[in-house]
Image (cartoon, helix red, strand yellow):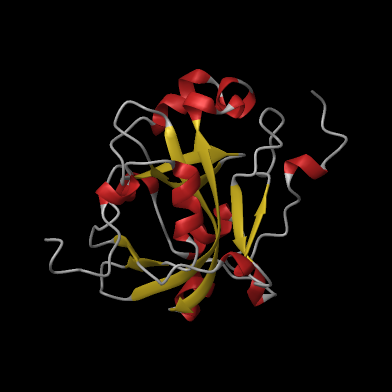
Length: 210
C-alpha cells in the first residue's frame, strides 16, 4: 500500500502534530471499516476531542493517570483504544512516539452499511446507533485486538479526507466527563448534526467535585 494508491486517505504522518488542531481537522472525514468479507461500513466524523498529556491536566488525575496515559505514547497515526466503563473507545495517536497524545473519535453519521451496523448494535432510535464513542465502536464491529496499533491508512480501518469545514459549521466546547482540565476547549462537533453525542461538556457540569 502506497500513498499514491490512496490519495484521499489520511496517513500516519498527518497525525504527527498538535492533537487539538487535528481533532478540528478530522470533522467531516469518513471513517471506513472494511469487514473480512469485503463489506464496507462508513461514517462521517461529526464529533472528536483531543488529549495532549504534555499540557493536559486530565492526564495526571482520574481516568487519565500516568500508567494509562502511557498507552497513548505510540507512533503517530496509529489506532489505539481507551477503555472507559468497560467499553473500548477508538482513538488515533498524535505527536511523536513516546508522547501521550491522541484524538478520540466521539460520533459518526452513518453513510454506508447501516443495516450491518444495526445488526452489530440494535437500537430503537436510529440516531442512537453511532452518536457516542462506545456506540460507534460496537456498530462498526471493531475489536481492539484486531485494530490496535495498526496505521490509519490500513485496509481494515482507514480515514478518508474531506474538505475542511468552515468555522461557522463547527462548535467548540469542553470535553466530556472530566474533572481536571474540564474547561479546555478541546472538543469539536458539527453544528446541527443529529448524530452528535448527547453528553454535556464538563465545564457545564457545575456539580462535579474538584
